[in-house]
Length: 420
Image 1 (cartoon, rainbow, N blue to C red):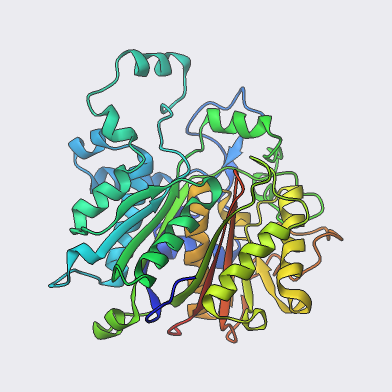
Image 2 (spheres, one colour):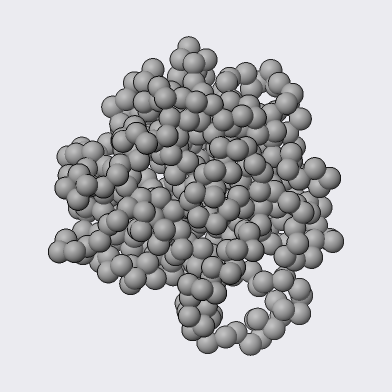
């Protein structure tokens, strides 16, 4: 547990998902309970079992053409570009500039499950040609640290700069690492980004082979149904988010809006199974408890949980059991929801998207819904805010959970800052 000298503020957010390009479009989509899941159109899915996914809107690709030079487009791949644009939006939203501050105390930490090295289109001949005739920028395109490198160059941040890869928990790990960097006294500000663009045939086939993905191709908008008894797996999606963190002193000195405070984190290994969570939920509960202890927040002070909520049978039941273990009787009073029910599962982007959404819930006093929840599951019997956003001006504190393949768990504790 780190001894925090002062509060750590979230002052800027950026986000792009299947719901829309930019923070406002995605947030408004969440509040409206829209689904970004559609039948996939950007590549051939004829030989995939699952044929639906959360594709980025066409407007995103138009934005890429506007924002990046031809040379930069050749030097980067989509994961890096998406992360860069989320980071840029968060920087603009925060109003943060170095402006005389020590650049060696400003960092960029990114989270990405895999670098986007899969060839667009995924045709066999394209893959073979890529290996036989790699372009001159292939190395810098596929570096997992490219995103943090480009953002550091753009903004002159000379502190720590690296990428974290912990599967579905990558974005949350990046934010947790950013928190620990500032809390340790080594830094003043961190741009933390989580992103993935794994919606491609190879990923779909791989997750299908693990029986992890929904096969409800006929009703894509209802395929994601976390905590519903009839859930049959997640739907893969592209997306990402960025969070600007800084000391409260720095934020208040420059009059920045504070969406929320990041007041505690935990990062744990289950040491159990490479893909399956420990079935009692005990390891997930341990992660939540450690995060609350780090934040010096009592379980009874938490009002809301942004759940990992993947819409898989085991994860949702285990997370519910874990919440009961970590919160005891207070679990019955918690409001719990899954933003994945609308965005799809963005893997490395999920933890960052959900942290940003949790900060917005605290800031606006509202809770985003869990869509697709129609049939109650006796093993999932908490208040999951089904199918409609809920006014919650009382919100004081919340947690955001991320649980990744490999047994990588993370919980972030957020407390209310300013109120919109």
